[in-house]
Length: 206
Image 1: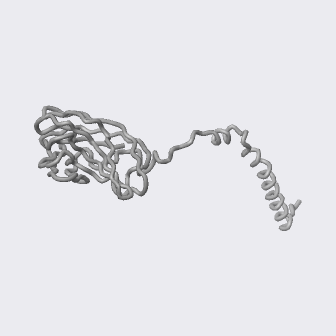
Image 2 (image 1 turned 30 degrees about the vertical axis):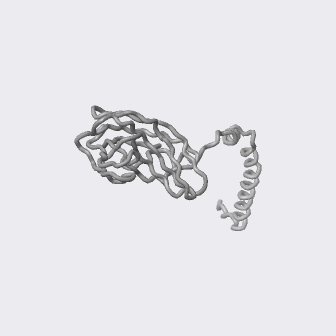
């Protein structure tokens, strides 16, 4: 008995009917899946809001480049007068620290531009280790903000006395905010008074 092959037109009809059936099933199922009382969808609706500034360039990791001083003075400068150098003789961690000498004012010290790294209204935690080269100066980290032509100062850490016999940890948390367009933001380390030289290591702002 010979089996006659299917008529081409019949195959096209069957395929069309299958396609129509699939479309109708999708139309019925999708609304049911997407209903707000669906547990999965409901979880998405009620998820906690995300603060997106916590991600990307304005947050997360350390905003200070070469904070450990292992790349010499790269990324650093001096606020005002003074000479900044890599110091392999003393280090809190790694092989070197950063030392500043020749200061002529208390506000002179290691500095770094962080203008493009800050988010307005965010709180930042600062940590650094400091060691004096002589004496017991009170050292602190400060942020200078310039917006719309006006400069303001944010104390990032409390002033803490340091000494030449060991490393002292400075840490603090502060909210950084400004009004208008930010044109400059400089992180720097200074003393409350005097011009004693000092060294810094393992600096972080995050």
